[in-house]
Each structure stands twice: as C-alpha cells, then as structure tokens.
Length: 292
Image 1 (cartoon, rainbow, N blue to C red):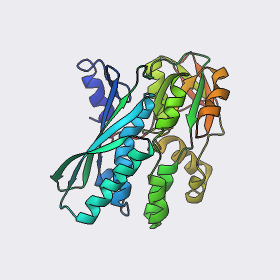
Image 2: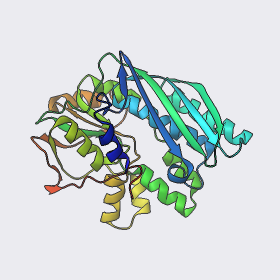
Image 3: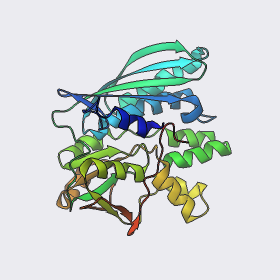
C-alpha cells in the first residue's frame, strides 16, 4: 500500500484531512518526515538538510495562505556529530528567519538512518483550501519548476555546491500571504506539478487545461539533453515547493504587483474532470511515498 492508498483508507476516520495543513481555529498545523535514504542524496550538507526539512513544512503553511509563526524538528541519527548537529540547527533557524518565523527546538533521538520529522505552525483567519477552484479561473504557479530534479542530477555528478544551493528552496510564505486574498484554491507542488493538478482537480471537482510554455528552471537545461527529459523534471519530478493556485483572471495583474516572485499563468480551470497539457491528457504521476 502506498501513501495515497493509505490516505484513502483513513479518509472516513479523518474527514478534516486533505489540505496542505490542518486548521484549528485560526492556527494551521502541519508535519513532515524526511529520510537520508530517500530525501537527502550523498553530498547533502546538514545545513541544507535543516533548511530543506523545515522548509518543507513551512511550504505547507504557505499553501494555506497563512503567516508562518514557528517550527520544531526531531533530529535522529546513528550518532550526534557536533558539527553536523549545529549545521542542521543553523539551516532550520535560517529558513525560519527568512519567512519571519522562529525555530524553537524539537527532539533528539538515535536512529540507524538520519531522519528528520518537522512540524510548522501558522496563523490565518481565512485559509485557502484546495477545494475552491471554479471553471473559468486562471491556473497559476509561482517561481520555476524542476529545481529539485536538477539538483538530484547535480548530486549524482558530484557538483555538490550547486546541488545544495538548488536544494535550499525558498518557502513561498510571503507570496502565499499576498495571493491568499484572491486565490480560490491552492496547493504546494511537493508531489510534482502533474500530481498537484490532479489533487486540486479532485478536491475542487473540476479539470484544468494547461498550455506550454511552462516556467522550467534554467538549471534543468544544464542537466538534460532532450525535451522529454526536461519535461520529466519540470512536470513530474516534484519537490519544488512552489504554489499552484487558481484565481479570477482579472486579479492576476494586481497579484503580480504585490508578489516578490514571478507568477506564471499555466492555463484555465475547466468543468472537468480531465487535466490536459496542450490538449493531451496529463497523467496523474508524481512522487508518492511507498510507491513501487
């Protein structure tokens, strides 16, 4: 059973689940777990691991259109190396400071594999959920796609400095706040653009007509040799932690004025349920924990 099947199994027991974070009053709460074997390639520094692990949870807060307030982490490793531990904490502190949140500690444990579990808190009186997209809305994304896929290729090549730089993504908390007043639905692209679109389509009972060109990161062109490989990293690989959202088309000029990152219109919300790219069905494919 993979992650998606497990979530479906628990759907009746957890009817409030399904967005990027849980909403408790005006608080939002989210948690994530990352492992050395699956999430931190050889060459990933502990500073990058701290930044990326905590950033992943902060990204979920951003996808709710919430202000990030605090984060904690569980750090588990076969041994506590002082330099590695301090570097991890610095990375966690720095990514929190970047979005004006506070890293307030966590827990330490021994484990056969370096593993991090993170929790982030946020605040909003009006969360943006995945379920509000309406036909005719514009479909948009912040930033660029494919950074993490390019980073993996660079880790494999041994270009560790550039790979670590790409891996330290910026959680889109500030753009999320700016977008929240106009967005009708929103999700972060941690599972890849294609899968994120299918998740939004299912939650909002709609479809999407997506058109190229897509905002593929320049780094992807440095690690790929053909259009199919470029498309794979930009559309399906995931872990880019950009915000994919829908909004009324006439709101886009104002959103672009107030956002500190580029916003690209990908297409249009349709009656559904099909998700297409240049009029061809886009497979529901991306990263899933436990998938063979």
